[in-house]
Length: 99
Image (cartoon, rainbow, N blue to C red):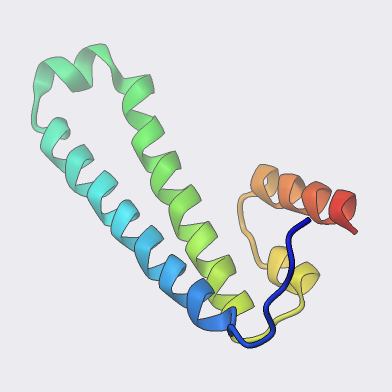
């Protein structure tokens, strides 16, 4: 069983993870910008190319959620701020199952 260590504050970890996810988002966006100039790629793989945008949105929403948790928001309140409906629903399901 996992034990909680009250001497270790979780807020700074949430904030640090949010920063890391924003680095991931920026990397995804840079890769997409590199590939968009390749006409062959954009012509033949437009649908797959849109996945880059979705991944960037997932990373950004996750980072924002962690930011809210880092400053002490209730998990349900923090999840309510997630703008991607499918992600919000998965997170609500996970919190409900854990509770």
